[in-house]
Image 1 (cartoon, one colour):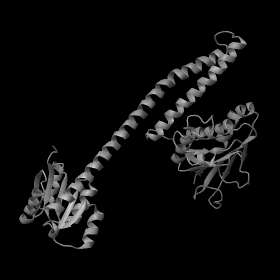
Image 2 (tube, helix red, strand yellow):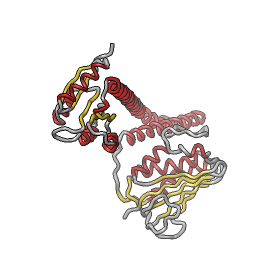
Image 3 (cartoon, one colour):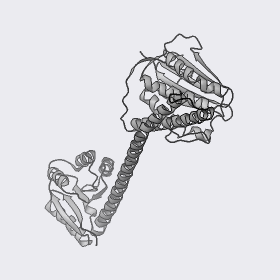
Image 4 (cartoon, one colour):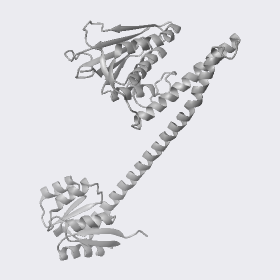
Length: 381
């Protein structure tokens, strides 16, 4: 058996309140009915009781029903509100519905059948909305718990991985005595695997910090030219190992514009290390070119921003990216068709870093013809 509905009737006219009560009772509605004679007392009742529905008179002594509906919805009161009025004005009905009223009925048309039908429809819809909101909140809570678990797990994994990396490096340096060539090769493979795992763990932690709003950035003027040059120098051995040509071009058009942005130096290094490292990873033959250009805002061609900017392009001659994959390229956990696509977090993290710097990132690619990743960051004033 269903529980009685909690109904609030707000009307300063005793006869009209009784008419609503009688109509609902005649329709067989099981209810507990509470009455209020003005807006102020109605608001107090709504604060203390979880009503299933409110029948509201349009004209009340202290204010009109329209303003009350607006205020209640603004205060996030989601209880169904059915407005009853002695006027059959269509414009009033439109204004009420726009303000958030659930339904509208002239008092001249009140009958047991019509009133109960409107009531049951409003309550049914309200409960469905409540169930959907509860399910959404539960899903969000589960998602947060899952992400917290992953964060704690990866955080705990990082410590032994760092320790293992240091120990393996010492073995590699013969710190514990000379090792055979076979052991040296095995240790090198272990170092490589451990560093890959450590890099993935660090990336998961960084993504969590950005998404959870726990990432604190330290902004200062950063000249991108030396930052990029250092990254290129560091990654050059990886490119040469694959027989790739890795080069850097600075201000190829000779504009002389500044290359300085206001940014977090460590995050910018992470961003461009990821983009250039990806280019090396997904290019088997040919070259990778890193190009940096500045603007003072008078040449908007090829830029993603309307303000003065510094643009960095990472061009490769790799296998390219299909049009289908490009649509979700910077999404979280996105993995392309490539067997070497990895965790799907690198480009997502790159996007988050760029967005944190008020910049923009984009990619142009064609299968078999390589890719160009473009980052535009606002330049320092």
